Length: 192
Image (cartoon, rainbow, N blue to C red; front, side):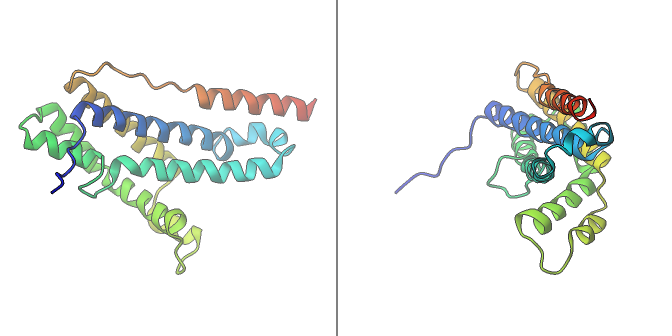
């Protein structure tokens, strides 16, 4: 008879959640450079390599949406905020501050549900019943909402890390900053 696998130690789960959230934020920052407000500042440079940037924009959007949903998966068998908070609650280790953080995550559930709809019907399982625009409209999620939801997730992982004695981990925006610098250099090249 084989024994069932044991869950990773809670510290490891929280460290892994931290990485999942940080990756999602990095993909958001990269996508934002191509699709958000900075786009107009770099459009001439991007037009030097139009196919590359068209596909990069899609790739970063895809990665951001899929990666953002990892910590919010609702299945009991996967690492997620839900499973970590359930484990802490079961162990009687949920402080009042963490209970507020859990409530804050639950308060932003409409954003995560919208992002899940986009992930499920646009990327993970392409709906044959709706266009991309239809799905985004039903999801009621805007780029700023994704940014704000990821900011909440980053605050929560910071609280979880402190709670279990893990060192604080700063978010390093270098990939987004480096990408912005690359786009600026291309813009200068394009405009002489």
